[in-house]
Length: 396
Image (cartoon, rainbow, N blue to C red; front, top):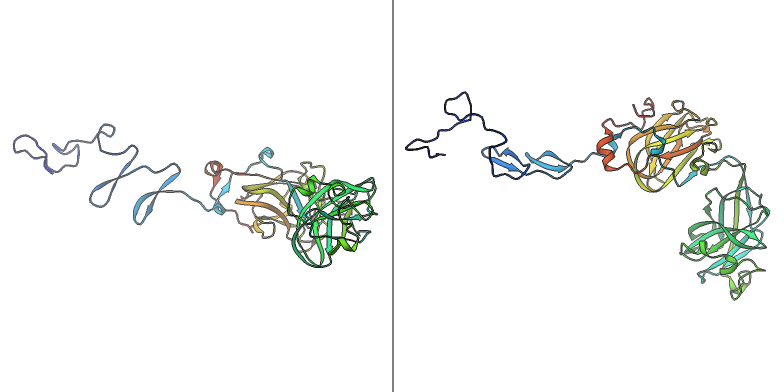
């Protein structure tokens, strides 16, 4: 391209090389002007210089189709290793725990009266009275047996005895789903115990309302038993008021070390399994969050030789995150176990030796809700094998 240079002078092709006569010298980086947007870059398309505008925050410069482009940077979470936190305050107490078994003597007692339900009512329709239970025993499960199938949703809960009537809710087990012939199990949370009189009432309700069992007493809002049913409602023990026969039974455990002990924020209590193949306990974080660490306080009663750390979004399908030789853990102390970044609601410690062994744990906590900022600033790049037992707890 020609530049006017006075007379017939024409600016010749030049490179701004200061060693070449009349080549112009180096361009001053901070004063040379271009018609460019702020923070953009110059790139070549093979023949001409082109402008590449700045990307968005968090974008990385990459190549797409042979051209430079800005794009959001993504890393597969199972390839991210977070910095290992050994600060207990960083960890969250799970809301609940469920175990394959708990030590103690189990006793199952059936209800002492025969009852039934009227499924046309959206109220408490049956209360079975179970007597002769051991006072102070932990209530492990409540089972409801219907004489025929019913596709409706049912709720179940249990109450203590007060002057011969049930009016103190011990636990709302919640939806037990469609009743089928045979016993349908509602699992208790293993924190409630049998009252001092050894009597528990079981309420069955034909309803999907989550508030019913919490706000209404069977004595005032439905039936109690044959001698104390609510005024104005059909007697559930008379043939005119029944269209299903229902039985209940309660399983209790005496001397139990329940799963709830592992999430009570107290290392002086503990959960202990029976001697069994693959004893396990899982904790519920109430919702799915992203994490990379568990804090585990193992108990000296454990005989298991290998454990797995597993995650799940539904408490039924489990994914291995770590396999640990148990001897690598320090008993009666906090162990901070790290694994690849994972989003899940449930976390399980699973006995993996394959033999009949005991697993016992004082406490389990979860490094909950790892943020995007944490991922950007605190992660490393060494994936942790889910099966390499030679790794220490920190994954190195």
